[in-house]
Length: 198
Image (cartoon, rainbow, N blue to C red):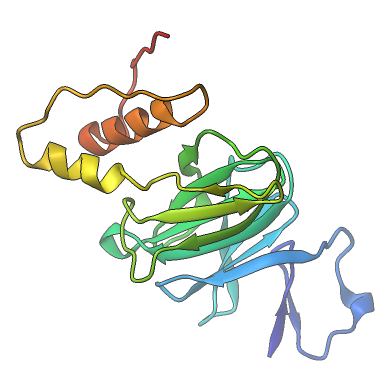
């Protein structure tokens, strides 16, 4: 048995609290991914652990500006884990983690943010891939449904008869986020130079 620390350090089972490295902080959330990797949140950092070797494989980077309070993970494409993180900064971010780990930037920054810190995340049962239904809850009593229609939009694109679409809704409802998600799915991560007008 070993102790996995928020800093990425590993201590033997017989270590005492005095052996902790200065600057360690409380782990606020943890989740076992479909790949068997363990994800731990402490402050604004999320570490990736290999439980077979008891080693830190990396971290999720470019994430939150405040403490990560919750996370969830599910099976992604090509033997990856998709990990969603919710923070006191009001945002939910999604990361795709491959088998090597390393420093992993966000795949998606879900907009609009909650009105208060995100306290809970859950993905629909047996969900796989980036079009999984992800639900988030905040201290303000909101439940966010950031990807509820994305799968339907992707199916429209795949059928080859892509219709003209109009997105309508109040400011902050997530129209631009949904459109950017759809374009990334269609044209890949290299999508750039996309301009928007109000």
